Structures are given as C-alpha cells and as structure tokens.
Length: 447
Image 1: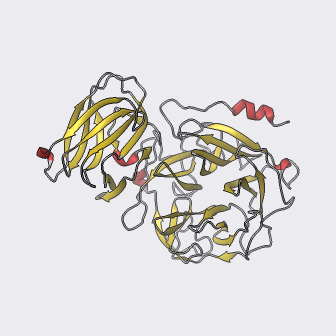
Image 2: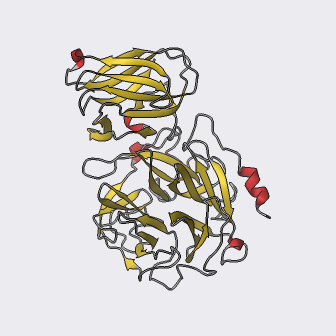
C-alpha cells in the first residue's frame, strides 16, 4: 500500500469557502470527466503535479466523488505502475469511466500515444488491469489513440471516441475491454477549433480530447468548448459553435489564457445530475500556469433548436448561491419535470410548472439578514409557491400566493416575507395549483 499516504493526505473534503470555482482548488485536477453512479458524481481526472510545472508533468490519475458538486473527496489514485505501463510515467493524460454489468471501467491515456483500461467492483477501486496491454494501440488509426470519451446510446450500447484533429469512434464489446469493430473516422462538416477559428486551418481543424453526449434525440460531439451535432452517434456531425465567447467571463476569470486565447485548452465533459446539465472543464485563470490547471463547472442550458447557450464562467460555480445577488431560476440544483425555455438575449425561464413540481437551491449563503424574497414571475393561474427547508417534504418556511389579480401576461415581482434564517440554508420551492402551466419563473432575489 505505498500509495496510501497520498490517498489519506487528500481524502478529507475539499471546500473553498464561498468561491466554488475551481471545484478542487490548488491541486491540479484537470481534464475532468464527471459521471453519475448511484446518485453520486464521480470525477475522473488527470493530475498536474505542481504549480511550478514548466511542462505537462502528470504522474498519476485521480478519482474524486461528490454528493453536491461542492464538497469533493479523493476516492482513488491510479499509478502507472498499477497498469500495463508498469513503471513511473509522467504523461498520465485524460481519462474516463463507465459502468456496466456490475463493474466499473476506468480508461486512461498513455500520453498521446495509446490508451488502456482498469476494472473494479467500485469506482473507488482497487483497480486491476485486465489486459496487461493497451486497449487502443499506436498503429490502430491514422490519428493518435488517446484522450478517449465513452458514450452510451439509447439502446444501452457503449462506444469510445478518441483522437486529435480527426476523431475515431468504435463500439465496445459487452466486456468493455475490447472493441466490437474497427474504428470509424467521424465526419465533421465545417469544423472550427482554437487553432482554426476562421476555418482555414485544415491541418489542425479541431483539437484533442473529443467527447460525445446525448440530449433530446441529438448527439453532441465536443472538443473543449466547441461542438457539433448529429442524429447518429457515428455522424456525420455538423459544426454548431462554441459555448464560450468574450461575454462569458466574470471579472477576474477572463485572464490569463492559453497561447491561442480563452477558447483553447477547455478539455472537459458534459453531464446531467438531478435534471440539470453541466459542463466540467479546464481553467488556468486562477493558477496563471497552463501546466497547472483547475477544474471549473458551469451550468449548461439548451435552446429550443438544440443548440447550447453560452455558459457563465465565474467563481460561484454550481450547487451554491449568493443571497446578495439575483439568482436565475434555471440554475437550480434539483427539480421535478420542469422545463427550461430560452428567451431573448441568451436568457432562460423555468416553464411548464404544474402542481407539486419543485426546485431545490442548496447552500444559499448570506441569508441571515434577509427578511423577504421577491420572485420575478408571470402567473398563468391562481397558485402558490411554498418555501420549504431542504426538500419538497421539508419544514414549511413561508408561502407566497399568486392570485387571479396577477394574471397580467407580463412579468412582475411577487414578494413574500421570511422568518429569520441561518447564513447558509438550502431551500426548496414547491408549486401548488390547478393546471399544467401555473406560472413562468424567471429569477428571485432576497432583501
């Protein structure tokens, strides 16, 4: 157990006060892939060794877990000595993890050359290399076989996507440690990337670190903050856009950036948790060193046409809130079957609210001096909003009624008085009324 001391050193929960981006500060956790297993988020990550790095020096792979996307616990450290590599190795590049038939499969990159897999009964390990050799070998395709991402389709089949500039995809066998087919090259129409922002660089048209996720009948192939869409997991994919631009950044988070600017180096993954979507990605704005990267998480919202809206890059992050600021309703942590609907100027509202639907906003800070909440709503029928502690069945704190006099067809502020609360409180809004569309909720503010 020569890795035990390292694991113990980091196995306490990591918190960062009110600032939640980066999610695991000053540790070098990067290239994040987040998967949800048994109601818990698991982050498989590369590990930049030191703030003093002058190049990419990464000696092991990490597995972290969280119940709330705020508090993270180190579950496992995978050393290259535990894999077919068999000796210390300083290019432990990107990873991903999947679950099938009672086993967890952790895929890892041997630098930018090959990729392997280890298996365990638990996402916390211990891990065993079942092949004793690479799963993706260096001569397999014209690209480089690294930075893999795993996608499960609607039929339950698993696929692996990998490569740089040109991406390849192959179905995995049920054993998850072998390929069911020869890898297929993915066709991307009119791609863009950090090195190809105007479409003229055909040698480096995209980036490395491909990832595929599925939402509402569409497959999304992403490379950092750039993405393309398709009706088929194999493609062809149509380049769609970037989820970042110069307006995405809060002050203090826009610089420094990579040599090609803020669109470069955003290696990451998309995931859904409690009916909310997120993007986990690399950032260097707080370390100032492209070789010692952090992981950030931002909310992701989809427009009616399937495109993703621009994300917000800030220190608040996800899973906690500031009572001194307006809180957007669509940035909930948990919800029932409520829908987010896009409106003008990259904005969203919560719609399709019916009786007993709810929204949960945990870890709201600076509540202790607040005595009122103002909801920005458009009422569709007589209804009420119950404000409860923690969950839909939590203690009732207050009730805000929206009568028929509020049926104006426009947004207005509806105020409710609140009792004294503690500084950090989790609140749940439960909606009561008749009909399938009680109201439209834009945002709320404490006073």
